[in-house]
Amino acid sequence: MKQRKITAFRIMCLLIAVAVLVFLGSGYRIIILLLSIFSALVFGRLWCGYVCPLGFYQELLSMLRKKLHIPTFHVSLKVKSYLRPLKWIILVYFLASVLFFGLRPVMYIRPDLSFSSADMSIYKIIIVGIVTGICFLKERAFCKYCPLGTLRGFVNKISFGKIKKDGTACTHCRACLECCPMDIRSIYEERNKSDITHSDCIYCMKCIEACPEQDVLSFTLFGKKVLSSKRNSKQVK
Amino acid sequence: MPFSFLLQELHQKAAEKIKAAKAHRRIIAVVIVAALVTIAFFTVKTNLARSSEVGNSAPASNIMQSAGNAAQPNGGNQTETAMQAKTLKRIENVASILGIAVLTSGGIIIYYQKKKKHVAPLPVLRSEEETH
Image 1 (cartoon, rainbow over the protein chains, first blue to last red):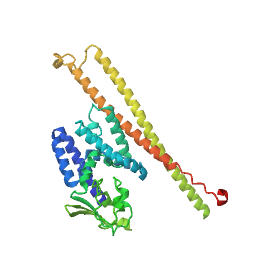
Image 2: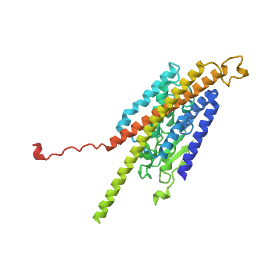
Image 3: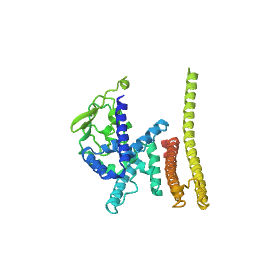
Image 4: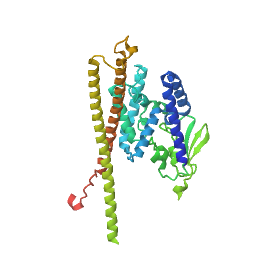
């Protein structure tokens, strides 16, 4: 029930955000940009998990996949290590095209615009198509390489939202790692540090939802505990 | 007892194989349907474009041409055609995106299924006598 509650709240936030962004249109672009920067400075990548329209699109695709009972695919650690530089290459390309050419880069994808605009270049169609295909099979696949997300990730470590772990009470069941859409291994592997906020974390709270132990994982905002894992009676039985 | 156990094992293996085959069949069906839908869509679209071209070249005898359009002959028709073309373009974009998406995900699924089935051969173990 708890699991459903947090996910439902997140999906609701995403839905409201997408509705607001679509109905406001392009007239309020500067306000949205300022809000995005402010939220990134204060909460890190919280925007990705609760506001981003592309994130919502990816969540919808994952839901559809689960409904169709199509299994996800697991990328091996070797392939992941090969793909890691891609994130930085995309970020450099993004920054270069914005700063030096003043262009909106091709990879800046707005699914609502992609599906409603009549004049889309063939490159953009191909990129959106491939992103849709990959995100359908792998949850939040684009978020791992999103240049805006990477920029927000720099602030994650010093943001006011923190994911904490009580390493002594952890039973190493891997539930947190299995459900993490961003494949963050440090949630599971970290034993000594209490602050396990990773630069890729989008604060989806799925790890806290999945953790079967009392108060092992928790989310703190401005130093106050907002959410914590609860003992799951069903799993204990 | 051993016979029933064997039977159970056989049943389980058969069920697993049927399940895997069904999943594979479903994926192939989705890919084929996507390809057929895309082909059908483009055929319809080409036909529509052709018919609209024929309509434009024909003399203006449209019922939609009202008194408001009298000052600008064929004006209403032109905007309508432009709107239709835009809508068609939009549908074409969405269909292309979905087509590429289905092909990408289908390709990934098939690749991973083949990878799963492929069993790496074990290294050949040789006795000490053979090696010397």
